[in-house]
Length: 184
Image (tube, rainbow, N blue to C red; front, side, top):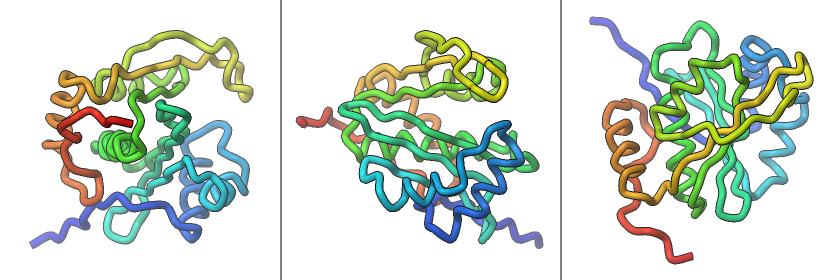
């Protein structure tokens, strides 16, 4: 019998930062500065950073900020050797769940125009391209595609999200979307 390590999404801790930075250097042209995650974890009360563990090993990470009624995805990454296994889907679903917890009404993000795989992932969740930021990425001058969700409280968004959640087998991703629209 083969034992498959369990997947779980957890809040990022200070001791996770070195591994997260190692993954970033492996998959991104311009990783975040060395102290950025420590600063985010200690000072940004409107942020949530997560790691995805397979057993005890971190295989991915993600972050989101709340700005007014909007949640903004700041980062998401999966170790190169673990990509295309559904881990990005699990992390993105966990971010959406955190956006509900934060009281957000919409979610936005930027993605490299060449990252078609990531754009397809976001489109699966119902995100749409609404614009571009020309030359946004300073490492190579690549454009960023701006993607935006409809209201995450709209019935159609919630149905799609619940359907995606039903196919994810990772602890800590979150439950179904809340039934009613928040009053705040």
